Length: 209
Image (cartoon, rainbow, N blue to C red; front, top):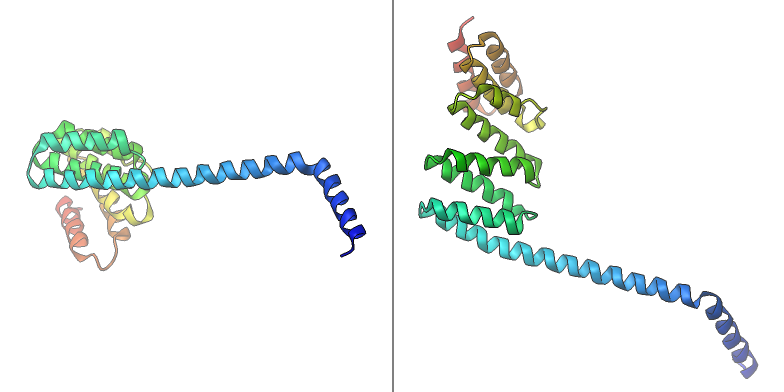
């Protein structure tokens, strides 16, 4: 390249920069800020998950030790501090089961309701609804249980939801409705789930008709 050509290239660059330099600078700065924010968010997410994992291990130890006060405290801490992580929904169901076995109905219901309201995955919400409906069945609060299960379930849960609704309806003395719900359960439960199907069939036979 000749000296003259170099001068022309330099002048062209100066002209381009005069026209587009500020815009280019801003675009680069914005891209850097976005990249920094993304990296920072990923780091924060990983940090949250790591701390939640430690807390979940502590919860499991409390469950094993049958320390229900510790179970409740850790579950609450998990929900308050790490509610956006997957560990929070796991903790809610784990704590609810432990509290239920210990006879703490209020604590059980609180944990299951949290999972219904805040769980990240629909499967966890569905399981929480099923378990809360069982607690309401124990309390003879049948209408609340049926209302809880009124929404269309996930396909994988149609059978067990229909079965639980049948239990609530049967307990209310609504035999025809219960029978229809059990039949729906039989139609939706997997063919290879023989134990569940046998139990539903037993309930259906017990209703007669």
